[in-house]
Length: 111
Length: 118
Image 1 (cartoon, helix red, strand yellow):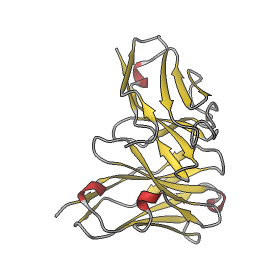
Image 2 (cartoon, rainbow over the protein chains, first blue to last red):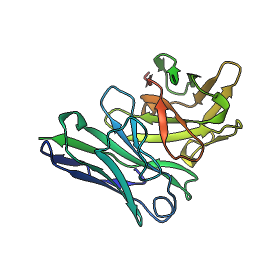
Image 3 (tube, chains in turn red, orange):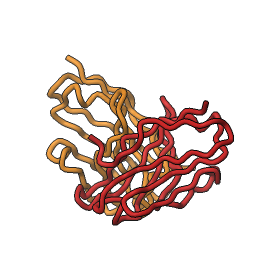
Image 4 (cartoon, chains in turn blue, orange):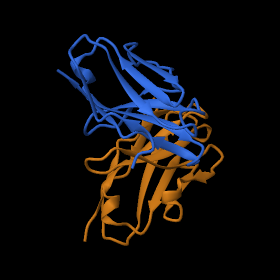
């Protein structure tokens, strides 16, 4: 059972914007800024898309943005493209677990 | 360029142990954390543990006593040993690098498939 809760699936049409939410607790997302998001295509290694809740690594499209409010983190993909179809996982440091914890994952489908 | 190269696929029997290696290159090995993450078939990502820049290891409670992460600085290699394997340990195992206190795993190994079967 994942410590962070995500919707199982989100879909959108090309060009639209979608937002994926990740709900935790005051022991993880609510306290720490060590929140990250990963894009995972089947058969490939996960790719870091956002770190420190809202920072984007070099080379990641500015169509991806992150935010955090209270115990919930969010990843927004704007101008949705076919190549964005993948699984997305959030991750946060947890004080109660004294380790990182991942979300359950959200499958993004581009219609 | 940063590279993390993992050892090859393993098939193990229940009760056995497995060691997966992750050889790093292209950066200062001792300046970064190295984490281990796995994904069982049809499941999400699961955090397993890490080794910090000074060589100390840490594991979530569910892996304590069964997981050991070590490193060899002379070969810039990190090792992940998981013991008392069961079928539930069948998964793809990844190593991933983190810059200190960034909270982001910016480079990942290619993954190592571990299959536990009698």
